[in-house]
Image (cartoon, rainbow, N blue to C red; front, side, top):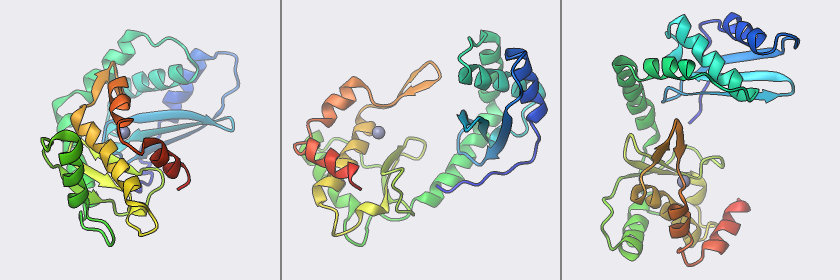
Length: 234
Ligand SMILES: [Zn+2]
């Protein structure tokens, strides 16, 4: 999904203050802090060429200052590998878990997510047909069919995606082509079907998406190595 920044609130003072606390003698780096219309209450931080890039969900835009401070503490401590006191985690989680924030996130997911869902019948391949065949062959037909759709864009970053909030599998358009062998597309759909089979487990605040069990099942795909190799050349 294409996302663009929506900067409405200046969080620089908060991040600079936290940076000063963590690194009293280090000169300030440049900060680039932006809100993005993510579908989840989420945020990331990374360093690029000495610049600190902070990206956060616009759901946090209206968060009270102590929550922003807790988030700045969490992100910068992660970045500089400093222990995060539980009080910051707790404060942030309390905000993110609030009913209205959760409800708003859910609503936004629905609106933003729905736009992605187009059709299962592509120009070249029909996802319903592929799903049903794989379901019969690998799962004895017992997987309930989720919403299946070709994604709007021919993304190379996201080849396939299972969206649990919508119970939908989205597949990149790059596979809807006669140049793509059917088994490669089947493998991508099979991977997403394994997400139905092995629901995401939370490990702390991290999502453990591909368990050992998942990876083991994935290798049962007969042309697994060939398919993996083909995906790398896309
Ligand atoms: Zn996956």
